[in-house]
Length: 285
Ligand code: SF4
Image (tube, rainbow, N blue to C red; front, side):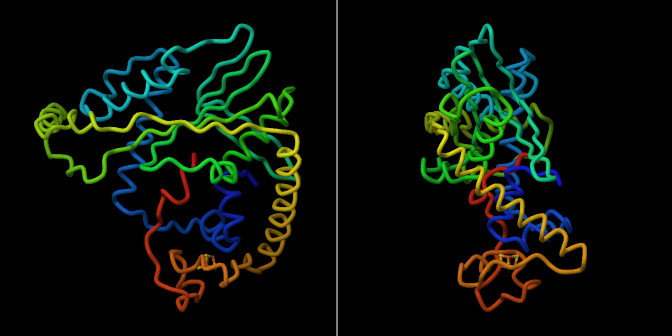
């Protein structure tokens, strides 16, 4: 099975939820605010990729001055973007993809930007969360663990030569009024008239968190990953024989905000709410 960090995260959170979402394609509803954040985040990532490829940016931001302002702030603040260096010899590539086969599964990662020279390799990731995550939470996150682990396994770098840096920029401002009806030009004029650029003057400066890597962390991730994949293979065998994936223990108090609470007959643990994407971070595919 092809597995991304999103798969591992959900598998560890609740195997039954993994079954519903990835094996049975049961989509949970997403709040309208979060849909707008996702679209904004995707456009922001696309802009950065265009810039890496030296492709024109202007057409993509012509009708969205807030996005243009945020992009300008980001590209003049983040050193690796403001002053891009292409290592010689080395590698600098956006949307860099790697895959590795482990215990019958394909683990796949896509780095927003990978910069590698003879001394070190750095993974950079862009986040458009409203609130930056803590260093501890990022260290525990499957995105960090899997991204570094795969790079160590698929390169000649020692773990100590690897790092991952998250850059946070606030996404679409909260409470932004609905887009007006009309042409792109009319929308742009209307947004400027409402003080869109002024609002972005208060946009927080992008901040970063860097996670270093080590042989000990690599070993620990190897152990956890192998156990998780062993369990997944076992659960998949049982699933093909008609048995559902196990539910998370009710005592872990995870069901009250899960969309599948009724399907799981866990209503007594609370009320379902719509999925909070801030809580689960972005899933690249
Ligand atoms: S309701 Fe609980 S057991 Fe069921 S999928 Fe959600 S988290 Fe898992």
